[in-house]
Length: 487
Image (cartoon, rainbow, N blue to C red; front, side, top):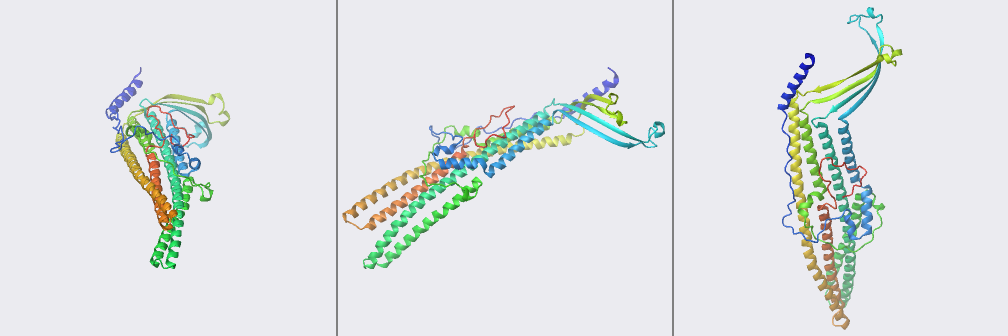
């Protein structure tokens, strides 16, 4: 081996050894929470996790149709799909940055030689000439240190995070649709009760007017009856006015005009199950899309640290070039115009350690921030689940007591009706008991609506049927054409 070859190799080896001394250590995976702290919440053994299409458990075909329409074209999902598509394009860009690359070139130039250059024109016999070049250059980057692989891994993890965020957007949408729909149904039920109350109070007012006209009662009784009728009508007007507001909100969620909504029929509110899965504290980490997105961002940040660390190593590539070159355009395409070349290249980051260390420090800070965000997301998710579960338990206890009050009020209606039939009292006592029973039923509907809203919120807090893709090397990239519903 000649000295002209040995000296550059020795210099490269010494430079590589010096550079290796400044390479930071391999990053450690940050500690992450392994379970959600569900303090104060008791799970039941019959509690189940939500299914993917969790709203179908209510057995309401109107709600099913609304959810399908929302998932098919809601504006909020279009934005999530766009972010997911951008993440997939980032993977393609990262993959294209490494491995084999090829570049074709073609140029024709009219050039003039300097009369005072290295070769004066008088020796060549011309001053102007044409230069034609056709070439195809190849370069293969040897990713010995894993920089390109880390970039691809980070892009893949970001795509997984975008897919989880897309599922999170779908979950927010479906839960909002269900909550708004049940709110409308509750308003319809309360409106029917309010109208019955108005009718009963109007009957009381008519009987009172007759007694006042006969001088049996003072006019104050009539004024009091008028006030009660007006208050009941105000309540009915409030429920009637709430319906179009709910429908407008529902239309906005679906991305259509209120007039384009399907005609909805009033239906009884479904029963509520307040059971919490026994493994909620542990399995919640894989069933909340926002937690999954945070976890994938930790993985992406970890790959970013690996990429920044690999930048301290030298880049080794192999290049080759073939083409045609001639100063006579008529001979450009002949075999005599062939040119070729190949050889390795070594790029050493000798004088850029300050920049590399700054980039490495930024990547470490991003990893720490991603880990902190993950822990915060887990804690917030646990608080959300605990809040909704405890709210459901409280509402369930109240509903049981309210059911007893409703039953007692209805028994009172029956006993007063029996006395009226026997002529032991006038119809006002039966009507008063009826109004009280209607008010008790209205309070029961209110509790049922609150319980449904809390159950929908608990379903959302439990992930709505989402299941996180396992975090592993070489994980499959989510498909852009996949449905955005929670899985």
